[in-house]
Length: 266
Image (cartoon, rainbow, N blue to C red; front, side, top):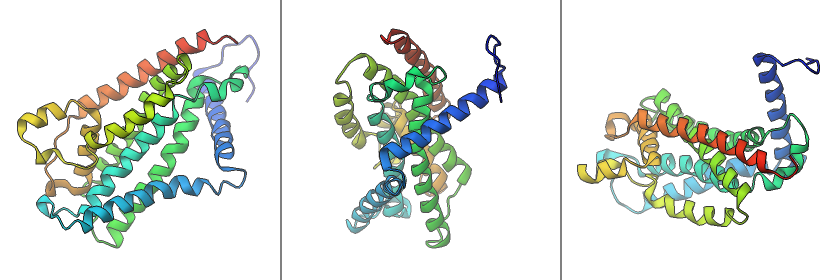
C-alpha cells in the first residue's frame, strides 16, 4: 500500500499503517525484553500462572471454608491473575516515553502506538493464562465458567482500564522524572483493597456502597460473576466500569498528545 505525499490518507489507509506500526513495535518490544529467541516470553506467561497457583494453594491449605462452597483456589486465581495484568501494565507505563524517545524520530510512530504495543504484549500473556485456567476448570476440575461471555467481558474491561490508566501514567512519567518510583509502591498498596482477595458479599450494604466506588473492585466482581454465577452473589455497575474505561482512555490520549508537543525534539 502506497500513500502519495501531499495526499491525506483515508481512514482505512491510516488504520492499516497504524496496525503495521504497532505490529513492528510489538516485535521490537518482544525482542528487546526477551531476546531474539523469545524464550523469556514464556516467563511472562508462567509468572502470573505460577504466582496465582501459589496464592491459590495457600488459600486452599488455610483450611477456611468459603461462603457458598466456593473453591478457594479458583477464587484466588480469578482474583490475582486479573490484578496481575493491571499491575504489569501500569507499573511499566511511566518509563515508556523516556525509554523509547528515539522511536519518535520516525514520523509515523506515535506515543499511542508505543503504548499499544507494550500493553498488547503484557495482556496477551495474561489472556493465555486465563485460557489455561478456564480449560483446566472446565475439563479437569469439571467447574466450567457459569457465564464465559461475562468472564471474558470482565477480563477485557480489566485490560482496557489498565491501558487507559497506563496512558495517563506514561504522560506523567514523560513530564516528571522519577515518577515511576512512586507507581510501584502504590500498586502494591492497592492489591489488598482491589477486590482481588475478597468478595463484596462478605461486607455489609453500607461498606459495599463505599467499596463500589473503586473500579477495580467492580471488575473483579464481574469476573467472579462470570466464573461462579449464582454460587457467589456479586455486586458491580457495568456502566460505571465503562465510564472509567472511556474516561481514562480519552483523557490518556489527550495527555499523550500534550506530552508529545512538549518534547524538545519536536
